[in-house]
Amino acid sequence: MLSYHIEEYELEFITPAKTSRNKFSSRIIYKVILKDGEGNMGIGECAPLRMLSIDDLPNYKELLDESCTALCESGNLAELDLKHLPSVEFGLETALISLRSKGLLFDTAFSRGESRIPINGLVWMNDGDKMLQEALSKAEQGFSCIKFKVGALDFDQECKMLEAFRKKFNAFKIEVRLDANGAFKADEAAFQLKELKRFDIHSIEQPIATDQWDDMARLCHKPILPIALDEELIGLEIKSRADAMLDYIHPQYIILKPNLIGGLRKADQWIQKCQLRSIPWWATSALESNIGLNAIAQWVSQYQPSLHQGLGTGALYKNNFESNLKLENGFMSYVEL
Image 1 (cartoon, rainbow, N blue to C red):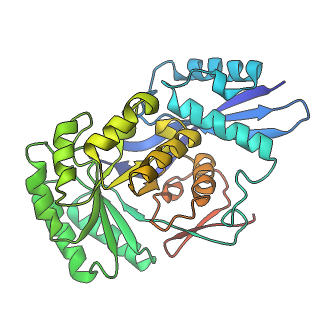
Image 2: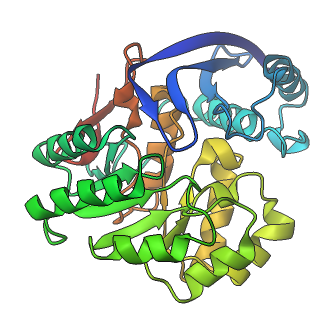
């Protein structure tokens, strides 16, 4: 018989994180602790992302409590209907894995400290000069791939910032990714992508808002820049709509955020569908604490990724939990504490 305990925790950002959609100075997470009859314990993180998660709901804590009660009664996560509560599914799934593994979540070369995961450096929205300085700092730290959040500044300012960065680091030295968070207008996106192409961009995440399949398909079928779908996956039912979306839009990449799409098993299902269509992917955190980040890192290490993963956000917080994860020279390692 399982029992549970929930702890609410507020993470404080060292510097507010700004995207084209919103600005974060803090966020609430829920630490779920499961225990079995033998005294074993497992920990998971349930944390909807404000204004983005489909379960960003005013009664979230009540729904989480109900879900934990149901899990403890049944002992089987598959019996719970959590399709509208993806962050709950992710947290309870990882708590169960933690409970049953009694140690490492996934026994891989990474979690044994024998290999590393390449990750991208992240530059949040700011004024152009500050973004440029942040990018240059990331380059000095050894990142060979840097992702810029774009779409909130004047477009010309963003282009000038990217041009200044490229004058110092060409594409042979540093890979540049962009993330627009759906900020470009559908009728202007093609022009903007053509302007951005001259900066040797690896890919751009979600250039236009979701649920515009016709417009997104046009951008992907004759790509000006390789496009990675991100928010497009959030809330999309895998069984009934994932195949249709991938076949119709056929993006160059997809981005997997387990916390937003319903957990690690759901992410595995997306990967299987992408493999059938030769669509590459990478995983990205959704501003989780080190609890969720650790789960995603160990899970993704099973795939021995060669593409840079978006897993460096644990360093954003003043008061994060202690972690085995270490960032150095653009790589993530798992170390003994």
